[in-house]
Picture (cartoon, rainbow over the protein chains, first blue to last red):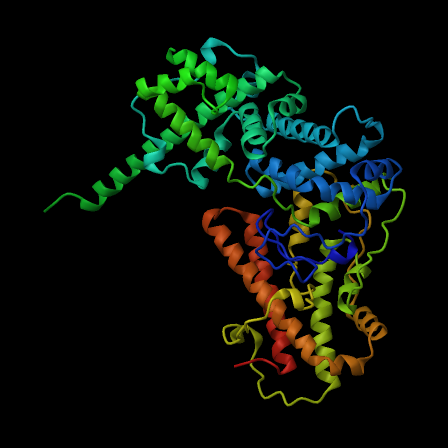
Length: 242
Length: 264
C-alpha cells in the first residue's frame, strides 16, 4: 500500500473502503492489494524489515493485517478501537522485530502481541461486569457452567443469528472471548492458542468450553428478553378496552 | 456415562467426533442432548464469521508515519511497478493521506473547471448544485474493473480530524510528514505541468466518466453510512463521514453541472 493508494474514500473499519485499483469496488472486502511489487517469502521480508526496509514492513503488514484487525474487531466490537489496537500491535511488532529469532512462528508472535495489547486495553477500561483475571485462572469446580434444564432451544428459536451472537460474544469475559475468537472464529488449534496466550493446552480447552457454555446462557437470556419484549408490546397494543 | 462425564468429555475433546459411550448417553439424556445441539449451533455460527477483515487503508498510512517518526524505517519504499494514470499520480504529491484526500477533491473540481474553460460549451443549465442533487442521475457504469477511477473527490474532509482524535499516540508523532494542502494555484500549476491542457479538453469524456464514477462511488458510501447509522445511531464518526460524503457529493455534482455534461 504505497502513496498512490493514499487517496481513498470513507471507511467504517471493515465495512467499506474505496480502493485505488479499479478492480475493487466499494462494498467488497477485496483481498487484492493495490501494489504487489515483491514476491518475498515471509522469512525474507522479516530479514529485510529487521534492516529497516519500508517495503518489507509493508509486505508483513499486508500478510497479517487482516487477521490482526479481525481479531481486534471481534474483541472490542467497534471499528475505531479495533483500528487503534491493530496499529498498536503492529507498532510493537515492528519496534521489536530485530529481536525476533524464529523460535516460534512469526504469526504466533504477532498474535501474542495483539492479544496482549487488546487485553491490556480491556484491563484499563476496567469493565465492572467482566472479570479479566477470573477468566484466566485455572479450572475450579465452582466455575463450571450451569445446567439450565428447560431453557429455550437455540435451534428452534432461531436466536443464533449473527447480530445476537456478536452481541453475546461482546459480553463474554475477555479471556473467554479471546479463546473463543481464536479457536471458533479464526480457526487456531489449542496448541497455537496456548502459545499465543501463554497458557497450557488444557487451560485453552477449558476456557473454550466455558466460553461456549457461557455464550449459550447469554443467547438463552437474549431469547427470554425478546419474548418478554414481545409480550409487553402485545399487551401495550391491545390496551384496556372501553 | 453420567452427565458430568459427558461435559468433561466435551471440554477435553470438543464436539466431534463423539465416542460411542457419549452418543449413547445422548439418546438417554435430553439435557445433554440439548446442550450438545446448542453448542454445535453456536460453533457453526461462529465459523461463518470471517476470520479476516480488511482494515481501513488509513491504518497502514498512519502506521507508516508513526514508524518513520520513530526512525524504524531506514530505506524508502520502492516505487510501485504499476504504471499509473496521470490522475493516480496526483496523490503522491500530498502527504499524509488524510490531507491528500481533501486535496484530491479540490484537484478534481479544478480539473473539471479547466476542462470547461478550455472548450467552449453552451452551458444551458445553470441550476445551483444543491437543488440539482436530486436531478443528477447516476448512470449505470460498466464493471469498475475497466474504468480508471479518480479517487480524489471521494474522501471526506472531516475524516482527518476524527482520525487524529482517535489515535492513542500523540498527534505530532503520528503525523511527522504533515504538510498543509497546497493552494489552488499550486493545483493548477501541477495539472498544467502534468498534462497538456489540450489533451485535457480532448479527454473531457474521460473526465466526465471519471466524475460519474466518483458520484456512483460516493452514493454507495452514503448508502453504507446510512445503513450503519440505522444500526448504530450514536456513532459520531459515522455521522461525520456521512456529512463529509454529502459535501463531497455536492462538490462533484457542481463539477458535473459546470461541465455541462449532466443528464437531466
